[in-house]
Length: 166
Image (cartoon, rainbow, N blue to C red; front, side, top):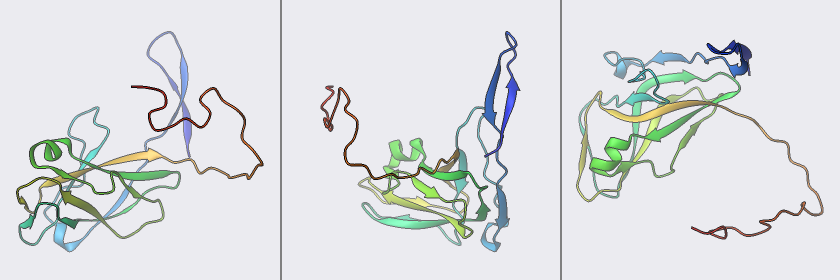
C-alpha cells in the first residue's frame, strides 16, 4: 500500500495517510449510456453503482437477484471494494444486501454485480440507470496466523454476545 506524509493546514503537524487508489473500469455494451460510478457529495465515503438493465426488473418480496452494473473493475493491490446497501432504498423499500456487505477482491476482473434482496412486503421495480448500491474502497491488511497452546488472559475473557451489557 502506498503511503505519504500530509502536511496539515494547522500547527505544522504531519500525518501518515494513504494515497487514493485509481480504479480502472471497463465499460460493457449494456452500460454505454451510464456514467462511471460517482460520489454524490464531496465527503461521501461510497460512490453510487447503477443498474445496467435491458428492461425494468421487478424484485418480489423476499426474493434475491444479481443486478449487473455494466462495468468491470480492477481494484489495486492492498485495497478491496465493499458493496453496501443504499440507506434510502432500505428505508423506503426494504431493499438490502443478503450478505450485509459484499467484498470485491483486488484480483477479481469480472463484471461488478450487486446481490440485492427485497426484505419489504411489496414488489420493487428497478430500471436501467437506477442507483442500487454503494461502492466503498478500503485498505486491506492480511493477517498471519500462529497456532499457540493458549491465549493471553484479558479482563473480558470468553464473555461475548452481550456480556458487556447494554
